[in-house]
Image 1 (tube, rainbow over the protein chains, first blue to last red):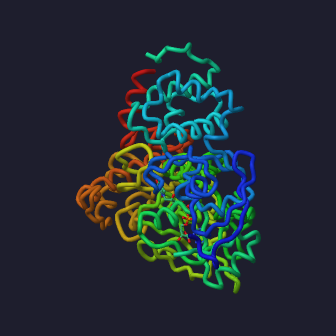
Image 2 (cartoon, chains in turn cyan, yellow):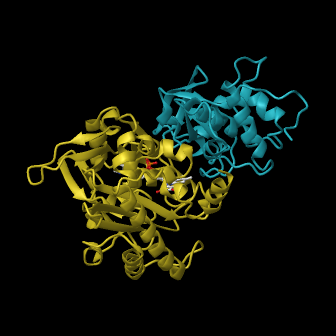
Image 3 (cartoon, rainbow over the protein chains, first blue to last red):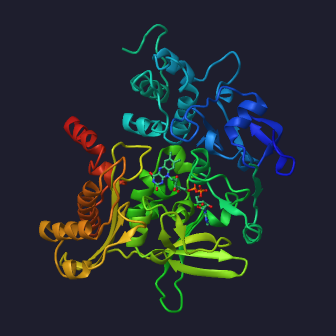
Length: 169
Length: 319
Ligand SMILES: Cc1cc2nc3c(=O)[nH]c(=O)nc-3n(C[C@H](O)[C@H](O)[C@H](O)COP(=O)(O)OP(=O)(O)OC[C@H]3O[C@@H](n4cnc5c(N)ncnc54)[C@H](O)[C@@H]3O)c2cc1C
């Protein structure tokens, strides 16, 4: 449990909702999102900035939440995978495309991939394949071989969705 | 272990916290990651400087009374992402943009800052060699005043600087690059992202009208306890064109002056050889830029250096 002397009550703004949390100054954002706020869509992989499973957006920019101090995000806008879909009934085109292109196997990297891709498309609405690969270069996937994930991002950029059942081959 | 974190909203507040023993944290990509992998525990007193907008500025400032040359001011909180995308930096301080563009991944570049890179003082830091080649200085400020230190005097060893624990780096200053100057940074890497330089080299060059060298500086990455400035370049280069002969001589000089270690990633012999190759490529790219050629940022990708070589060759073949 956090120590009385150093823990502080702060508000974190996650997916448009302000959450009060009492945390030590050294707590990383990932552990607060998962352990205090209960948003477990953000994954813990390597836990030291190498794999990208913990990627979230802070003010629209990608951040490895495992190695970012939660208290540094006060007053900033945090977006996690739970905040990507426009409504509970509807997926974001990135989500639809990554599913339909066959870019999800075990799914562990998917939340991080989607957030990195979202930041990329925000900056570069029509990225080349090379730009997509650079944009996702902080996200490891051990299942898919990346090709279908890259394709899903490019399809999203083109505004096209594949027909259900098309595996992208 | 608990940590008290103060999120500073003014520079004075940050300096006061540092005077009381707090360690500054910018992006935390060295500090927090270092703590997570067990290098050093997170300090018990931290002061976050990421809200200090006055440290997130790029601009020109007038020179001092001893040297009136205007200086480029890059605030300590300026991120690698800002540097690589900044039109002025990309055009006139290209070596720095080359370096920032190679750092980590988009998230590392978004969060990681120039101040953190310089003050972390890793001999493998990417911005160090181009900054040293360009004659950059760090502005250090504490509650008792401010001083400007050339980077050559700032770095004292791996992870150590001559800055006091109460001194905040507020900015990096770089003497203005005139039209005829070009700079570049290249590194040897085994993969294209999330990589640390195996070795690297930064170069800054001014050419005479006839294309011969008027001024040149080269600095080396990851071949000694700190970023290393090459000495004795003038005798080799001043008044000569940057051709195979002079570039090969610089490569030999770099290999001679390097004092690399062997580790998991490369042997000392391999580093000694390849740092010469990097020095040659950096100098060549800087010379071409000085002559007015546009080489895309970073040179590593544009020229297919290191892990990007095959990809660049393939792209070339596809065109
Ligand atoms: C996955 C990954 C990949 C990376 N790849 C590269 C790479 O390719 N090349 C490279 O060079 N680096 C790389 N790094 C290292 C790191 O990202 C950079 O050094 C970055 O610039 C550090 O900036 P920061 O703001 O995160 O520093 P922080 O971690 O916040 O601080 C680093 C150190 O500097 C001190 N400090 C910070 N700001 C100041 C200041 N203004 N004044 C005084 N002291 C200060 C801190 O107290 C700390 O000791 C990588 C890191 C990670 C996690």
